[in-house]
Length: 144
Image 1 (cartoon, helix red, strand yellow):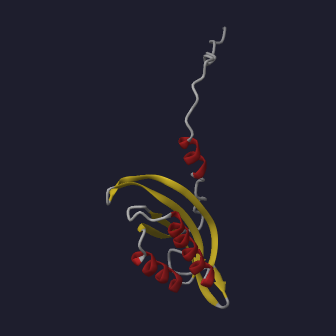
Image 2 (tube, rainbow, N blue to C red):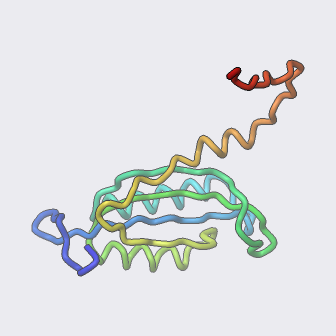
Image 3 (cartoon, helix red, strand yellow):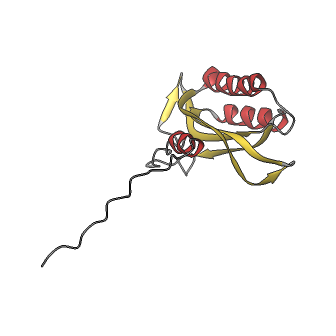
């Protein structure tokens, strides 16, 4: 909660609800197996002392601005609940992990809407549209 209280506990310990978005990039020519290891390690850290909720791998997407001459990065969303120590451990680890360009951990407030599923829009933009030979039907004005 915004005032520091929590509705959740695990084993008698207060849990806070956080959402983390991590950005991974290939600016160091990171092989896919290394990116998978970063994802796996982050999830393992969360499940060791917290609860992993929604996870989405959004795939490669354009960056808002170029970072180290890279215009795209892999985006992931991890929503989790856990104690403050987990948050500190994730921040410390992701800051020093090669291949993590940026990350953001945000505390979710009650009533925050679910994250959109951007995976569908990424797949749609990757597939080339086929030109249609048939003309689109035109709506006729109503008589009246």
